[in-house]
Length: 195
Length: 187
Image 1 (tube, rainbow over the protein chains, first blue to last red):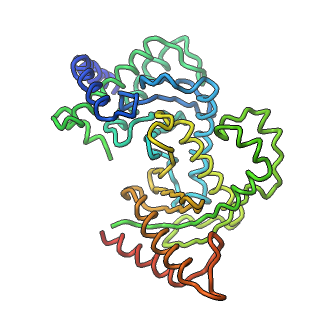
Image 2 (cartoon, each protein chain N blue to C red):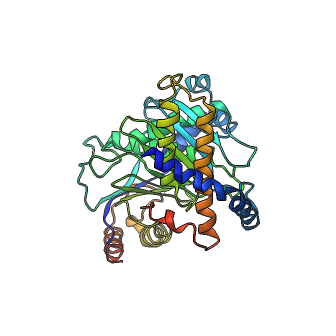
Image 3 (cartoon, rainbow over the protein chains, first blue to last red):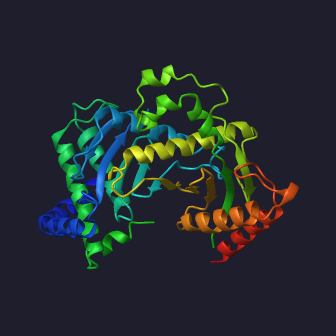
């Protein structure tokens, strides 16, 4: 499962240099008020008790959240996710919890595994291939955090290789979006992974 | 074919009572989420502060029965959208460069929750099936402007006059809502 995903990742990586620069200039020119050039703003991983175990900011924006803010936001999200399943909110039984949060300036995609770990990606509105990115980060987590003999369960992930692989996944998501926005091919393959 | 589940309307009453008690203190904070733990424990809210007021409720269908305790449902829903709004504001990667950030909707595997807050502080909550498109404009123009402001607030006169943002029962509004739901279901 993961082996194939990584092949995809490294193939994507080959075109990253070329496409990504194109993408960056495209975005800067199209959204003048935004200082961010990436469709993926940040990646979050929250453990099953609501603790933040991984956070990485990928937007070029300097004005980012500090460590306390990220920890707080992660646990707030954990609670909101749980509340969305209660019968006070949910009109239907057996809800999965929030998968996508839409706000006026960004989308937050969330994927919860069977073991209760939540992967979150904060992206530009209408960015494509984010679902795929989430699954890929899950693969990376399984291969480079869980299989790391020094990694302790539920604890923050501090592994170079892990961060590197997440970066590759994020870049290939950027690539998918650059194809999408310039109207060319490239993005076509990713569209099928959307709902 | 869009399947609709429930519709709630909340007024601003709760928020006002929340801020009036410690308005000066809270107004210094940029966001509720930036309060430290010590700040939060120093705030003593009366028990009913977080109790919202549902102005209107309509149910098309609800496979998961409503919480029998309406008081609890009100509190949970109010807490949910209030926190969600703060969360969205805090997390905004543009930091307000594109204007105020608002929470608009969230989707789970089997339902979608739409949210719209008017300038007057009325909150409209709608749950539908998950595949539903963005209903922000519908909530804004059709339900709030046309059905509520024009159909309820401006129409009544004398004794039948409806107070703004207060709980109401209005047949015209109910029918308008049902009509809108039918039209939406056929698009």
